Image 1 (cartoon, rainbow, N blue to C red):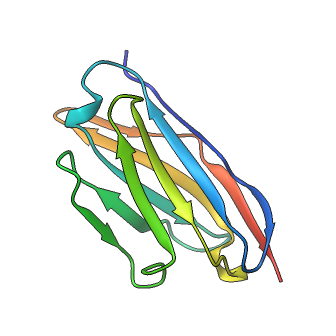
Image 2: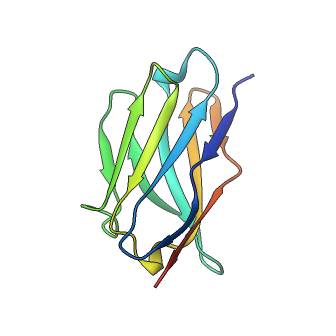
Length: 115
């Protein structure tokens, strides 16, 4: 059974950095497109960054130039490097992996940026 686990959230001061990790079990990881989403209290869940199975990336305007999504297929892992964090980046961050019939979501990891 394919499963997805996120990690790496925490509390950081404005201007700081965090790196989130998303591990997808199974031997077909390289075929998955993976995205990071976030949801702040009282708001809808929005896409932050995505990476295709071929490594193509896309970012929301709010994080361009500050966040970097990458993947290491040898470790079944997608990373979200977050630099120059702002208080408005505070949210629960979710990883999503999609391929064929699979549409997997993680449990979320809290990121809190203090001013």
